[in-house]
Image (cartoon, rainbow, N blue to C red; front, side, top):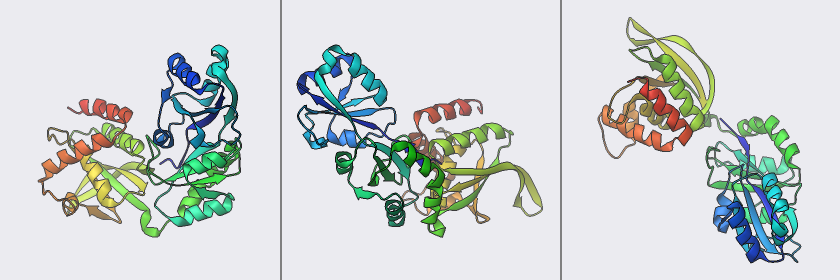
Length: 328
């Protein structure tokens, strides 16, 4: 599970001719003209948002931008483009905006926001205000409860911190988990056991499939793995491969995801992914209690398979499909 990552970079370009600057950057470097909403929602750490304003402005206010552009490259690459372009693209000055750190929270808990404000001497405000008031050596902490990849929208708040990015990020790397656990209620953490069973003994492939899902959806932390016995019936035991997962996801939601790993789209059953929480098995029928449409087990598995594949990032989805092909 990832709690921290860098956000999009911000540059303010003071231009003598904003119209021609925008045209030149678009034609020469394929920068995109975007709206304010797109700029605010961009979270790619390999992209840069550019606000093009008149040259005589002093305050870096996003509302003064004649054009907003998005470059799918780092801010250093953008600065190289600007330096090397014809007539310097009519730009008289470049201001570097505050840096952004994305911080994932376990829940919409005001305690952690208040704690961050206190410990980092920060101020809560909206994104545009933070960009306006922030300077080059300031950092914006953008808070979210969503997985940080691919896009953690919506944000639950932004905190402007008077601290350079490298210092702020280094400190949060050391302290992030402490802030998260300090503000968690006991029921927010779940310590799971996932037992994998396959008649054809493709345990390594199934573990790889599970690992791709845990990574792609940022489900939690794998605390351990190994062989164990599962007493499915009295006086009958089976060897299963067990994975211990520490997660913020509630049991029913995790069970839905695991059912998506048990089946293919055509209803072919691949393996058992049994979920245990506090030594109690979470049955697939528990999922049905919360469903409006009552399915049999195979139809429910097909439904969860399709939902899982829609949720996964493209890279993990491709890997899952490749692994699935080795099971047929």
